[in-house]
Length: 265
Image (cartoon, rainbow, N blue to C red):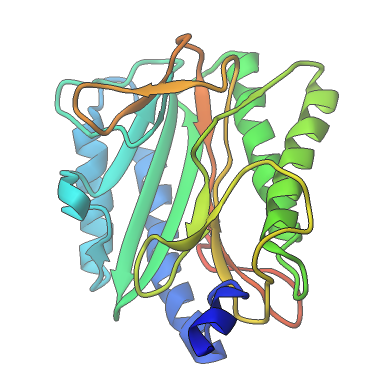
């Protein structure tokens, strides 16, 4: 009976546990800011990985991603048509105009933080800038739905509505990547339930005070369909269109949504 009852709500944490998660999340935020500052033309994605790992370890934390199901990096570095799970390498050199999505996680005192950020290298074209903005707006719409009493799919629906609002604002369509989305998080990086980035409202487990989700929309300038490359990790758009990925770890509180992966200004 207890197991069934727990399944009816999104996993929740105490106020102290949320503070512990926010401490892990702050390290992730600092790592992402450091990576963005280092992302210049001529720099490899492996060098960006080194930057992130140094920030995480200097803070007394451990990279969540390194060794996760065999993943070799401390970040996922996904450039241009790569959606998620790009492996950092010495051979992949950033160029002016690249669109880069960096996903990063850290474990501190057993608690996980997980966040992603898309940005341009140097000057990027307007379509790419708007794609990243649309993905951010979609994430923010999902964050706003992190309220007590809402259901899981209310967050999914809010993300989808955020994407549609961005389409109206920008006067163009975006592809919501099929089959990928967010997740619950705590002492493990990926916990049930899975959070889709679109769907009808009013379904799934309820959000309660302390519930935590990683909210992470992924949008493209074209297709909703992807494929995995031969490295068994890197997810790319099947039509070669560019992709963006934004993510925050967010908690439900009595005072509104709390972002646990804040980045320093």
